[in-house]
Image (tube, rainbow, N blue to C red):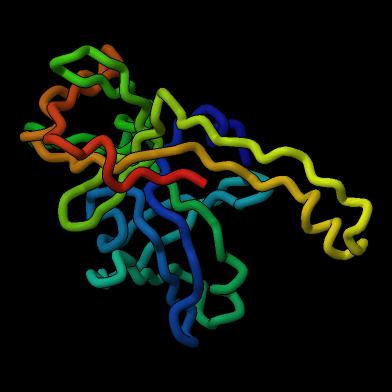
Length: 215
């Protein structure tokens, strides 16, 4: 990575998830609402998933697979499956200054992440946006501010359990934070205030309880 690249601010637009076929095509999971990022030829940037190193590449073109919410792209110099496999999990970047012009009520995904979510009527803080998914309407995944209390079971006497079973019993589960999905539509998300780092919602009855995820 040269000095000029270090000075740039990057915008992540997608992740290469796997090769497509045998001729070097690549499957990309998008993190952008702008199809031209994956369809129009031109310079893009790849970031190594482990080292963070960034290199420029030439995008030759792409196509969209709607049922899987994936793009298939072609990169110059990647002409077989082995070379494509080497790029698995690489991030695709663009210069942050290279942002498409937005229409009214359009937002960049990166600008929505980490916004605080409030109930417009009660002013209660609900949580924080941690991801955005496309499924018909966009969905905001919100990590709840008030996490549910997880009941802990009393410790068991492991003296009479076999060594193999004991290892299983002693393994601690990895708890994921509880989240909910909020449809990103004007009727529900009534205020998006990026300068003040907040979103206000007017959720219909039951929305804050459905689709709750916890482990």
